[in-house]
Image (cartoon, rainbow, N blue to C red; front, side):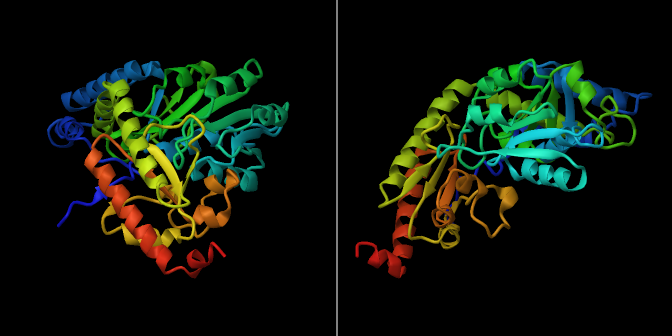
Length: 393
């Protein structure tokens, strides 16, 4: 059977074999609990976690003391956002975020509005997917406590100007939280992490295991703003109870090492492949690219194919290619992408759009095959669409 092409790296990535090898001893031989402080099994596990934490911190340019491990970015987002709820701010709290955020942010904000009395402002974006800095300034209030902005969008790859954003809220006692999940291992993060008070990551977006992520907090002021999200055992400075996932953390560290060690060269190669893919897909009649005019991740393109039902196109492509019509976390939605509609793309066109995201195992041959298959399936579906025949009338 012909190997299916995988172009859905923004949904998840295959675990690197070297990551699996690094984890295996801590699943079977050195299986101790880091909280078992009275014997060598626990000591070995604790040493592995400390070494992995130092490695992650060194690569990302952050302090190892300011890392809290989670099950992934969704938990991390809940942990940070809910620390700023009305429950902890009796005078009322106001959060600012963006309409193109991941559903983990949007759904958590909606929950806090409904059940915890938090006021939330959702910033608009322009047709490129970028927020307007003047809109941000206008949204600030005396009770604003947190600005939550995704660094790189998971559907379009669009990168927000985090340093410019940070300058606007500097010296205003407002915390900046960036969802850096999609950016890890794809672009440099030093500048963004330099100005962020909080950031979250998931290992499985960077060739690591699923079920492990982290929250980074900048300093003691940020730490004091956090509140325990999971109680039970006092682990991780009492901020996140539960047995620490030693093999996951070891795998996370290895995946970050591998993803970042040749980052500049990988960015060049993957950008070339992404551009080749995009150019080929844009040769399909009337197709258009979403978010291409803004800075974006090197691996991501979002293409609209008018006069084609996106769901039908996905089904047709699924025999040969794994792609998506947006976030894997929002796959059950019957609505058009909230990211694309926020960018003022017509809902019908948003329904006809697909996200292509490539990775380190993608080859030029994969790109050529993908272009040919998509071209064939789009034309096949259009031939069955009466509107396609009538478009020139």
